[in-house]
Length: 225
Image (cartoon, rainbow, N blue to C red; front, side, top):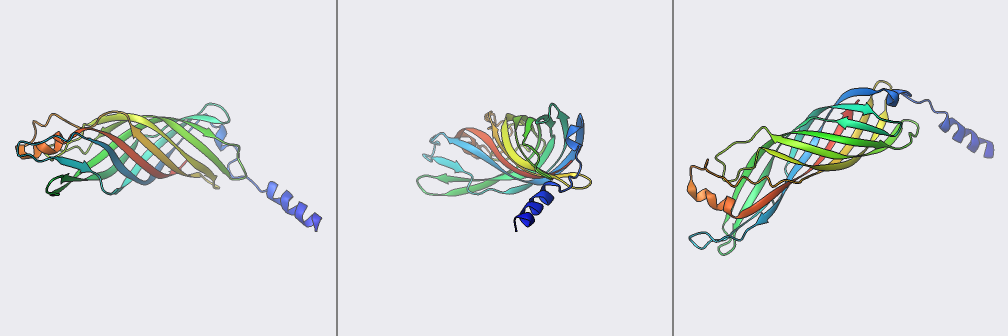
């Protein structure tokens, strides 16, 4: 019985590894696709309009979006690498404004297609057969390439922030498949307060109801390397 157990353990340890030298390349390229959700942390002002109304804003639900990008990975040592992953995120944000006295509601949405350029440090654990979990963190800058003026709310065209996440390298015979989750936290105020683009002046009250907004995003991708 003991010999069977020992032989099973030995067989598991001797399981052939795919792409044994893949992580020893000085650099490699790849691409990724996935899903994400966009969010904003809103700060309401409680401002009173000339007609005595007070509007408060919230984002009641998340809307899933699509993400696609490329990646480049630079080898630093057996555990660390430097990673650049330019990605386009196609998505939107749904806003609801509520007037505190009458409970009147106004709903609007903002289409945001972000080009995000993150620079991350990747720390990978010891490889176990054909699996290798890792942690990732870094900074990013973002550009809204789907920005459209004239909406009741408008966000600035650029942002920056920090991000962190985790994933797992899965070594297949011809490439690595890496499911990954990242959490992105914007550090800038992305609310556009100069609304000279508004045609309907009555819509200005929605911008005046907010003093600031900072971005948040959760991204789930499959990396092909």
